[in-house]
Figure 1 (cartoon, rainbow, N blue to C red):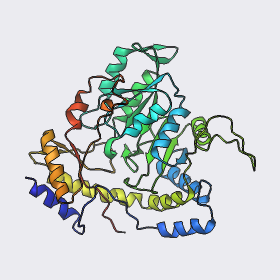
Figure 2: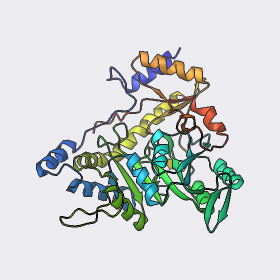
Figure 3: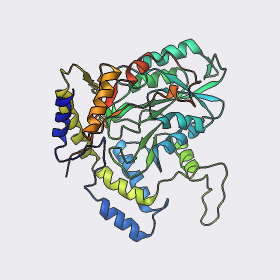
Figure 4: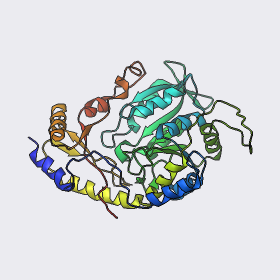
Length: 382
């Protein structure tokens, strides 16, 4: 049924007996930096490579402050805490996201509110966000309160889906209007730009993930980005067990977390970051090929970037004409050892979040069962 589509994907990755969704690419200084790290004896959360990676990431993103951590989830949790999110608060986000987005909110004791996505960006819809806030909230002393629950809506997490940009400037303006802290979950958007500015650097805080399936990886890892010095200092303190700096004594002044990135992972990440621009350009070439092939396809629509962005196209994405077509395509591909995947289950439908407040989620429900992610590994060999 999908012979032409699968033959085309095979032609893009001709040397592969099986085609994974997204595999890492190590073609730079990884081995040299790892050897240097091992020789230094500093392989845990203290070491030169952590500092070098933070500095390199700050320079790359033009962010004033970067705090390296052991995962994107950890970075998102700390971003919420450093922004003042607490139990009895509420945090707006989208249902189309990896579970870590909602989990990070839950870790703080706050409750998520799920708002619909934009049909084109697959990220939080500015129209839906403003409509929800106008109908369901009131402002008192420059704080936003939910009329239904009487709780403060403290923050909003937008997720840049699959490396494509949300309508970030519109979302930022809405959050400013309603006195809500905006946080960017840019876990999938390392290397993506909107109007020549790095995604993850528009909000008060943003985060990246460096899990093994991301465009660059340290095997694990994440960072928090911010231009807010107070927030960044708080994030660094909380992510290092809230230890009071001292040459030899171990004293802590609040509940902290052991979230710091290990030096050995930072060594790997530094080498990966050096190749990021090459990886992005390679993935953009792949996206161009997918876009051309699926242009007039009767079963699928390719999800493209807007004119103002330069996406990393982390996972190239199709919208199938219906759920049956999506499922049949994935199943047929897997038989050919081509590992497509569907989107995540909507967060609003997970048992731990099914009772959370939400809007109608029209676009989310319409699209989530039709999304297909295509193999999107870097093919560049240096």
